[in-house]
Length: 117
Image (cartoon, rainbow, N blue to C red):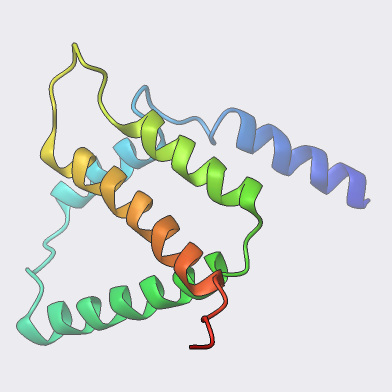
């Protein structure tokens, strides 16, 4: 029974549940336009900022115990998402890649033993 459920889940994953050309999020974005979704309030934006800060600190904590191989993989992923030289340099993509590199640098600093002076 478990194998049957696993196979079913994998088959949905492989075809992304019938995703559209731009992926499963494309259908969600199209549906959002149909809904009457109010803009976020100031209080909701503040809560989102707080949660992002909390998540950043949790990720930093996890990365501080990551292996060198894992940190290198994150650096390589940051290079991968950076636009090619012949592509349009999108500021948000550049900033995201830079933030990934900064996370790795900060995590490595946490791993270093403080020197006894």
